Amino acid sequence: MNHVAFDVAPELIEQYREKLKSKRIRVTCVVSHADSLNGKHQPVFDPTDTFVRSIYFSDPNGIQLEFAAWTHVFTKDDVAHAPKTEADLVSHEEKSAEAVAGGD
Image (cartoon, rainbow, N blue to C red; front, side, top):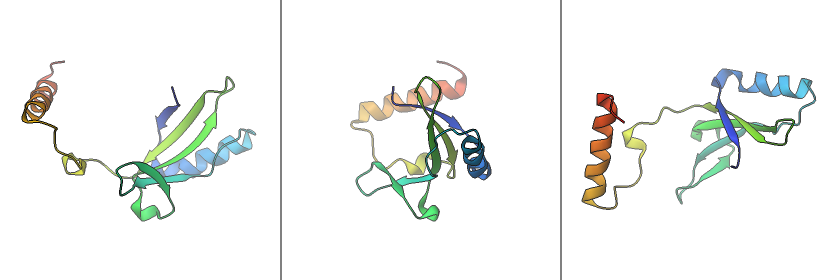
């Protein structure tokens, strides 16, 4: 496991960072993440090109934690690749239909 992330409200990320600092917990600066050209996520400094803002810190046992403030709601249009094969597409569509219908 790399770390555990908790979803927090975007307007509270700075407040949470300050509260952690006031408790003498080492916490990173707020990191803004965006998609890079190669499809991987990397930190960026342009908040308008951000899908999540994060802070990282550790619990008393050394487990890395993240507060993640999502700034973008993802939709089907955000998927940048097609299924590998027609069978993959059908399988994905069947699973999606089952989930909507309340199946597993």
